[in-house]
Length: 255
Image (cartoon, rainbow, N blue to C red):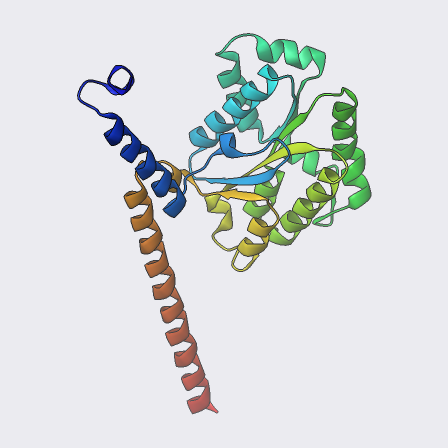
């Protein structure tokens, strides 16, 4: 059986060992994407490449539509067009879903402007704008899949506090309506996030690293990347400590 499935010369024992090796590698250096998520999770995908996130979201929506979900996509205009183009390449499912109200496209910037006041998300307005869309979709009786990058837009603007509050509002909405919520954050928007990064991650049930990690094919490669990142963090912390000590010494001498 194993020769037929996996090629001549591969024994059952070898195949079993390979399977165990793959299982162990996933445990010590896990790799994940949206296909690993439950349909009521709130997960975040970090990314570098626009093409990467567009392809990922298009696949997420295609899967949702084919399984009868109502899909809501709140993205930048550029991403909305690219996502629609990718989905349409697989047939006319998107056109039918749009007409039936099963695919709802929202411009992230325009939608934000309806509930952000003085740089802060207003709870009542958020529920009027976003909550009403989710409520209508829920009334259809189907499950809901949402992709949103409004939080990413806020981070691009440097408004991390508003982004974190918006994540909390989404979580409040999830307590009322079971839905799958897929958030996209460009890594370029988080260069100055500092300690807020931990809040962003803890606001989600699952976290997916950017494609520089998820595209690595072996556990060994992923472990090497983790080790390199740990070394860089330690180096930066040491440099910061030295800089703070130098500043303190100068202030002492100047006093």
